[in-house]
Length: 287
Image (cartoon, rainbow, N blue to C red; front, side, top):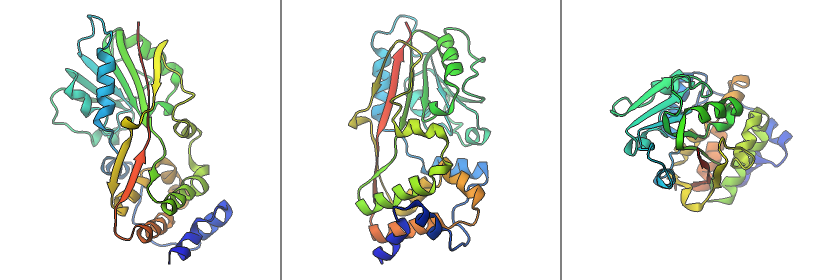
């Protein structure tokens, strides 16, 4: 049976596409609706380990001047607030900021020192000059106009304050056949549907710049995300990919993700999928 299923994941993109489009039925996962997508995003997207936030906190503490007292952190591109909430443990006030109203609508409202705003990340006009201690951008920097964003970052961050952009790369699975199947889905089927900015994720921000001269790029194993999850949950994560949403708009009856799920269920035979995401970080200070 595994051999039969693996035929769907031919290394030829032409064969891959034709096989996955020969049958159509009702998809179990739909992402036409932005509200639904926000819900799926909140449910299935991986969260960062605590080491990411302790790294940011420790860097902030090092060589900070007297004006930096953990007063205000702004999380740009915050989505549903997954990357904003951990900052509330360290900073007196945190603002989550995202262009998507639906994502913000899914954010928590019960944390006293956390508020949310809707707007484009490049527009920080609601902030004063030299007001912010920390700005973070998680898995969103590559979507923004870097020049405009960095002009605003340089304006609003205090001397001694910190700017951090971080994200995670393509997931790595614990079984070779499973990895091959997902790679085919990622590259051969969805390849034409990824935004060109996706290359920055593939490169782990290796060619991305930083607004300040004093900065470094970090990518260590202790920052990585590790999860064990059922096949259903892993497929849920794949369903949040932007390229998949774009693909579905053009192929609304496609059952390709269901076929991938069936393949993974055969490979894992009831056991969990072990997933590893490498995490990379650009971190620097304003002087």
